[in-house]
Structures are given as structure tokens and as C-alpha cells.
Image (cartoon, rainbow, N blue to C red):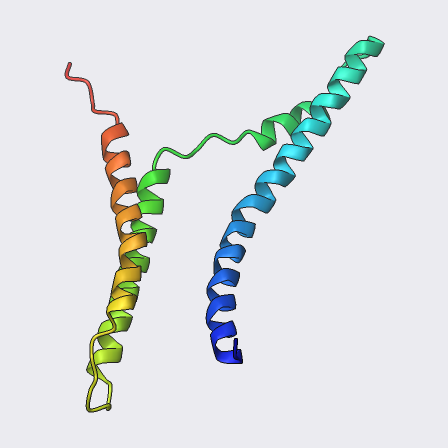
Length: 135
């Protein structure tokens, strides 16, 4: 395996690993904080002592309700990322000086992933949206 093909393998893997780490590390951290607070409350209750309010705030902070427009916000961001990838592919094609320039279909194909996820999130937002009651 030469250096060029090794880079072609390691770069996408590192990108996906970074995205996974951004999601997984904070989740694990909050989970461990929550478990430590629950264990402290359990040991205090076994000793018959009152639970300090600081432990209760730890439990309340680790459980954050989702904002009402969360799906819409995430969906619009995914659609914007998809549109940016398509614009990048079209710009590379339009300003290419190579005589055999062709549209980079792989970049447009990759744009389908955030685009379809964005459409699904916007659809979830629309389906879960509360409709006003008629009086």
C-alpha cells in the first residue's frame, strides 16, 4: 500500500471518527456524572442523611429537554450543508480549466446524505408540530 492510498483511507476514517467523538464523548461524560450523582444519593439515603441540592441540580442538568424546534433547526442545517456541497461541485466544474472537465458526481452524491437527513428532520418537525385548536 503506497502513501497516497493510505491517505485516501485514513482521511475519511478520521473524519467519521471525529464526528463520532463529538457525539459520543459528551454523552458518556453526562452519563457518568449522572451515575455518580445517583450513587451519591443512594449512599446518603442509606445513611439516613438529607440529599444536598447540589446533587439534584446535577441530575437536572444532565437531563435537558429538547427544544421545540430542534428537528427544524437540525434539518435546515443539514439542508444548508447539502446545498453548500452541491454549490462547491458546480463551482469546481464551472471554473475548471481542464479540457476534460466533468461534473464531480461523487461530491453531489455525498451531498445527498445530509440533504436526505435534513428532509427527514424537517418532515419529523412538520409531523410533530402542534396544530392550534379551533375555538
